[in-house]
Length: 356
Image (tube, rainbow, N blue to C red; front, side, top):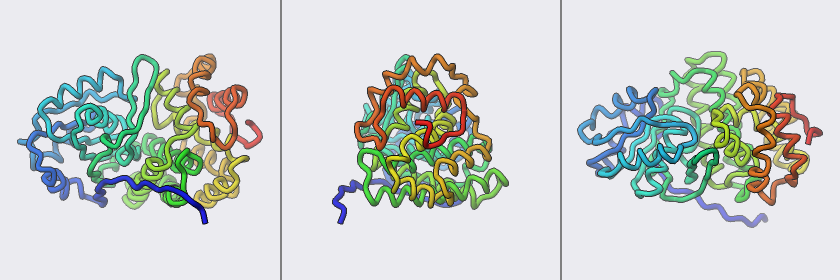
């Protein structure tokens, strides 16, 4: 029998269509909060205020200066806004949740999160901050939201392109959980189920953006993905994407969607059991081809160059990624192998197991 350690993270999850309107007030009341900092990006601020109408008198400060990768100056401004708060309520995607985590990291304030994308950050204890061109990440249980309210209805206005990228970002959490440093049978089972929900929901959503069932599948898949990632930890894929995102301000979800098949191609030859389980969850004969074809059919940009990355940029971050590469990655990470992987992801060539 396999010996392993599984550390389940605490947290309350409320899931279902319409629950943000019908249950959020009670979930906030459970904390006895009287001075709430509301964090929402510019595109979600109107929705956030609508959801907060029943307890608007307790919203004592609002922060809407959310930016991807949470620049340090943004974190400092959000912390200043939290000066008199006893609860942080965040409504939005991963960057919004990340900003709330930056506040909790230094203040210890509890977070109630209402996701509007499929980021998964709301169920992890991982925080990230960017200073200059360098993104630093860490893990601290103090930043884990205490309650998450998942309402598929809130994702109905999320554009298809962003929904697809966000869903594939969640897919990355699942795939990487199979070989991340703290992987175990429980997190792998959760990850496999997450892949199934995401693989079912993504094509359905692309065919009909108003499909509530597809939105619910994706949101449930994102929750499972974040849960698996939170326990198993981050591996090579996330190290690559965090460095690229911090250095070149690339869009988070799209970067993950493009890079993932190439990391899978790099690792699959030396992780046959994981590759087999990923393929089965995708309903594909080959996991690399299946994942790449899924992204292609969904209109994911072919390569990082379409996001504005220059080919010469690859070598400037190579050493930074190598320094972070996990020692137990299924395929040992070398400068040549990593360079080949990044060039293929930049060019948008179809990944194969032989490429690296």
